[in-house]
Length: 303
Figure 1 (cartoon, one colour):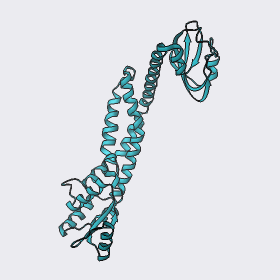
Figure 2: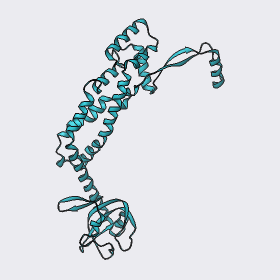
Figure 3: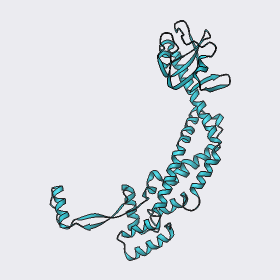
Figure 4: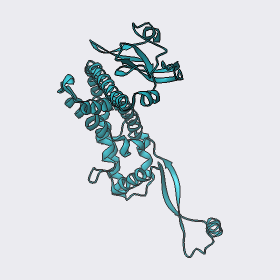
């Protein structure tokens, strides 16, 4: 891609031949006979092009188009620019790179601006309706929330599984004589009294929706919707270089955030399925806790 500074601003040029045929372009410029005036373009290619200086001609993939005070143009890489044109080149190249970045970010944000309605509709679709993010978030949080209606032994176990990122439900049982003997041999120690081990009894699917990085409220409301509302109020043409950088960076995260939300929702639906949540009955519960959990399932579980 080639970016050239013209009277109409920065424009993109695709074909290197368009550069070679520009009036005044010299592909064999003697740098000792010409003085740099300004940088007029920048290019980045997959294929290499030769440096335009007569003393170099080294192939490279990134460089600048420069104009000299005697009215000629050529192309050079950064190393040649520093070597033959010194501090002036470094100052001009930094400014040109900054101008290109600013222009690209502004153009990108304007393009994004015209897609806002589509994005807002997608976020609404993800959040609202049956088994959407709003419902999944609210109901999944009740599993770990204090006073959320879930029996304490179950909410504690689910919270423990989330912290350890381990979806295996286990219950303690007394180890057999053979198991104790094996443990003593492995750990080279004597075990006194009854020894308990955790016995896996079920696998709770969809637990990922409760992981911090998959927090649906954070993703869809804080990271996307709130920033989206702020972005809609901006005058893109008046944004500073730093502001453009900030919003371009945020724009670049949206697709990842939407994908993460879709994943979290799918895992939440799996977690809240009735068959899946019933696995938690394997946790030792008092009689009244079992009754409480049955009522909890009626309010929370997806059939």
